[in-house]
Amino acid sequence: APPFCAGRRCCCLNRKHHMSIHFHDLISDKNILSALQTEGYDTPTPIQAQAIPAALADNDIMASAQTGSGKTAAFLLPTLQRLTRRSEKPGKGPRALVLTPTRELAAQVEKNAQAYAKNMKWFRTVSIVGGSSFGYQIRALSKPVDLVVATPGRLMDLMNSGKIDFDRLEV
Image (cartoon, rainbow, N blue to C red; front, side):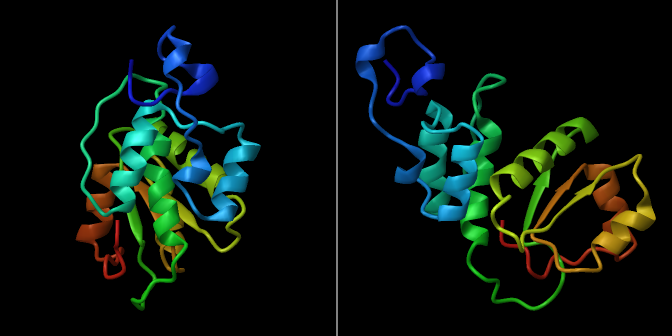
């Protein structure tokens, strides 16, 4: 049996191995926990139960899991937990950067980040993807931003034009 199970979305049929791990055992910020509860998340999936503690301990993670296994929350939740602490660095650039291969995945990641951070009223995300207004993206980056979700091509365009500042980048 796997070391952790996702409860009602269990990956196996052997219910005897269930451990009683919950998100409140992994994440301490009450705003994130409240948002998770609203989203219907109670018990982490195996990838989340393994990745979240490692990420919170500032370890690099390389993981592979099936579609729908909770990989996005596995990296976003510890990132959001870290961003609850004020930045020590001045500037407007992002504190966290998520690179995705497609616009569609970028939209999904940003949507999830906004859902998990919905009780963090100060939290700002910007999606930087091709096919969207370059001017809008530059204006969005002119204000302090916490999380940028980007595709490589458009991010390189902004970097090459000097329109994005990574001085505050933490994650």
